[in-house]
Image (cartoon, rainbow, N blue to C red; front, side, top):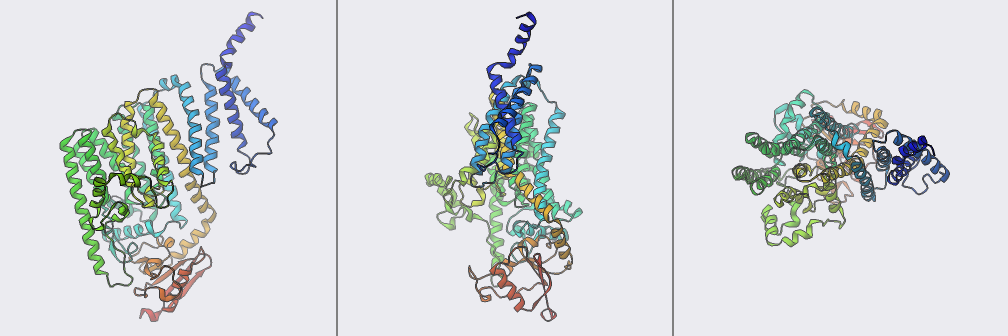
Length: 639
């Protein structure tokens, strides 16, 4: 063997060590799997791709192996095999998660994907640790990445919620009632609504939420339901700014900061909380994050301002400020500020509950003899009835149970009404995307930041432990804060390994929970655009000063008026399964128009309601088959 041959062999040997060869083989196989996913059909069915010959498998894999080998020889200074491995695995994972249709096993499949894919990512991070160390993104790059992450977050939230409205998929509860409320706020300055409790009533009798006035100027300029949906998206996306500033305060590197803002933007519970349209809870996440930031920066006037704004979100938002005050007292030893926060939030909480109790009792008595009789129940403490022995104790009953029988709390922690695993899955959905970093601290006092999640685990109200509803925004802020605070305490390479795992889990869960929602509603709009536009044109013919009773999915489209009611609440049944018109309350508050949503088969109850309206003198003025049925009062009724 001549010298030139020896030199060539010597130069090739580093590219063909066993570890690189095995990595390259895996990369070639992943590349083939990604290529093979272009076939039609569903990969989760056994028959998928069974017509692919093994010769084809080996041929394509060999060709990819050869290409990867050539690249590796030319770029021996870089771990190119790991890049190809990660690329192929990423394409496969994205495709798998996006199209998997078995909802029963979806979470288990996602867990399997996260475990396997995380191994590839961690291997990639370890083999490219020098590149990780060398790359130091500048301040502008970090800010740009945060803005892009926030834009992605806002885009998908706005897209999902706007498409929901445009496709007549947003019900009265909980969107139509807020559209009606903002209409009245625009006209009178007061948060009045007829759609929420079936009588003209302030929303603040149900929830004390002055924070909504922050959106009112934008609604003045653009008086559209879409303004509210987009406003919620912007509010939540803005949280990337305090997240970035908190990372900088704790002196995290630019790379870690970029991953932290990415995790916040793609955190599944953040977008999932918008799946049923706008709620005041959306303000909790950015307001609490700003509260935490200004506390850490010792800018106390700003801290108190954001504590006050947090209290304005909802009566129970005080619980989050109370828990933070305890953290300030016990963990940070800031006794003055902790005491002030605690005293102020406790006082507000007590006053708010007293106001709700008093106003709800007043209006319940006022409308006691009304037909239909509105449901005005005061503070919604019943969601914790499983922890209250004596109903007269109210929330104090929860505290009493916790103090005298803590063992019972454990029986409720993962117990559901159906006896399933929903709470355990919810626990994983909240902590997996954060890599369980909120627990990664030697300081036990920091675990106080995890306590808010108990509010959703200890209840048997099923929506509170479902990431598709709005009960996680405050909890999310605490968990993100704990994550950022704990990261500096971890040593390298554990820090980058765990944050990388968190980012993988977060992205995988986002693909499963959020992306399909967007594509579903976008497809619904694309496939039925003409139908939805025609429905809007029909509804636009109804006079703005006319009172309307309509089906739930129609209400938000006609809610910009003084009087609008939902049919199922305005004409109430007196028995669970009505069989005749006598099983409904008398028609006492007739409106100018009645609108039935005819896109679906009319239920037996709605058929009876239609009969009642016809019996009471309403006549059909417009009948659009498969779309809308509109009735109006006759002149005899009006006179």
